[in-house]
Amino acid sequence: MTDHILIERRGAVQIIRMNRPDKKNALTRAMYAKMSAALAEGDADPGVRVHVFLGLPGAFSAGNDLADFLVVATGGEGGTEVWDFLMALARVEKPVVSGVDGIAVGIGTTLNLHCDLTFATPRTVFRTPFVDLGLVPEAGSSLLAPQILGRQGAFALLGLGEDFSAERAKAAGLIHEVVEESALESAVLTAAGEIAAKPRQALKIARDLMLGSRDELVARIKLESEHFRERLRSEEARAALTAFMTRKKAG
Ligand code: COA
Image (tube, helix red, strand yellow):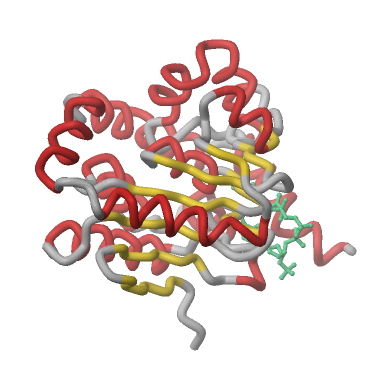
C-alpha cells in the first residue's frame, strides 16, 4: 500500500510530507496518526530541530477525508486521531515550517495557523468551507484566525468561506512569503536550515515567549471539537457531506 505520509530527515530537519495524490491529500485517520507520531518523535529527538510540512505539487491538502466525516455523520465512530493531531500541533515544542502549493482546504489551511513560517505559491488557494458543510471552525482557528487576520478577515475566511489567494494570505499575515512553485521546497528547506542553525535554547525561549501559554488554545480546540462532533451529526452536515460524496457517481 502507498504510504500516504512520508517522513524524511535532512540533517536536523524533519519533513512530514502528505502523499495521497489520488485524493488531493485528503487526510485519513491513519494519516493524522502518522503525523502526530512524527511530531512527537521529532520533538523527543535532540537530532531534530525543526519540523516541516509539505504536500504535493498542486495539492497541499483537500482537508479531512469527507468519507471519514460521513461515517461519523451517519452514526459511526470517529476515533481520536484528529484530536490527537490537533493536540500535537497545539503543543509542538519545536518550530514548524510549511510549504503550500495549490489546494489548501479545511485543515490544509488551519494547520498553517500553527506554523511559525508558511511559504505558498502563486496558485495556492486557502479555503475553509466549514460553515458551508454545516460544520464549525476547528484546530483552534476560531481563536487563531481573528488574532492573525483581524475580526473581518477571520469572518471572511471562516464564516463566508472565501478563497484566500497566496497574495491575499500574505497581505493578511497568514503566510510569510509567496514563492514560485519550482522554488517552494528549496525556500522551505532553506528557512528550516536557518532555524536549525540558530542557538537552540535562545530560539526555544523566543518561540515560547511569542506563543505564550497554549492552555487557551487547547481549551478552544476542545470547545470547537465538541461543537464539531455535534454538527457532524446534524442534518445540515449530513446533506452537505452526502452531496459531495455522491457528486462523482452522478457524473
Ligand atoms: N475527502 C475525500 N475525498 C476527497 C476530498 C476530501 N476532502 N477532496 C477531494 N477528494 C477526492 C475527490 O472525491 C476525488 O476523488 P475521485 O477521483 O475518486 O472522485 C479526488 O479527490 C480528486 O478531487 P476532485 O474534486 O476531482 O479535484 P478538483 O481539483 O476538481 O477539486 C477540491 C479539488 C479540493 C477543490 C475538491 O475536491 C473539494 O472541494 N474537496 C472537498 C474539500 C473539503 O470540503 N474538505 C473538507 C474541509 S472541512
